Amino acid sequence: MLLKQYLKELNRVEMLAPAEEEQLWLGFKDQGDLDSRRQIIESYQPLVFKAAMSWKVNEPTLMDIIQEGTVGLIEAVENYDHTRGVAFSLYAFHRIRGRMLNFMQQEGKADLAYIDSPLDSEDSVTMADRLIDKSVEVASQAEQNFLVEKVKDAMERLPAKEQLVLSGVFFEDREPKQLAETLDMSISHIYRLQKQGIRRVRGMLSKFMQHW
Image (cartoon, rainbow, N blue to C red):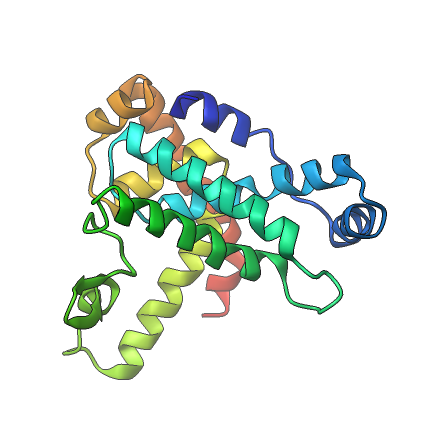
């Protein structure tokens, strides 16, 4: 599956309401209903996409990572105990990310800019650790990190294409022309998605910023 097709399918995914999700877990775990299993897997596919975007790789490798992450998601659905009160998203994300990391290690590509990976075999410091400016006061750094997380949380609720464009522009420093080529879109479409995404994020954060 090409990235463009995958994003098209991802845009159709709708989040499950808590009550609806609970019924699906009951249907699958207690009654063996495979359609409930399928709906759970499909509804959590954006979680795979989120984990895959931690890697800066070309499109074919990204699709391989997504495929591995989907296998991890399926394994998580099979092994999850819905009666223990642990959020499935937290349980599944670690299995998804672990599956992706194992794949990249097997392919000899684990050194490719993964934000949570150690920078070398003798050092537990990760890229994320190096990105923190330790010269900034702790309070200021915490405030900045909090705001960044708020923006990231808002971006995760965007349609997949808008999320991909904003992540590319603001977190990966990619040029609009490069994104247009990667996503097989016109530059004008990239700018339109960027503008729409920014407007949505501002809308989601407007109430929060009034009290900041």
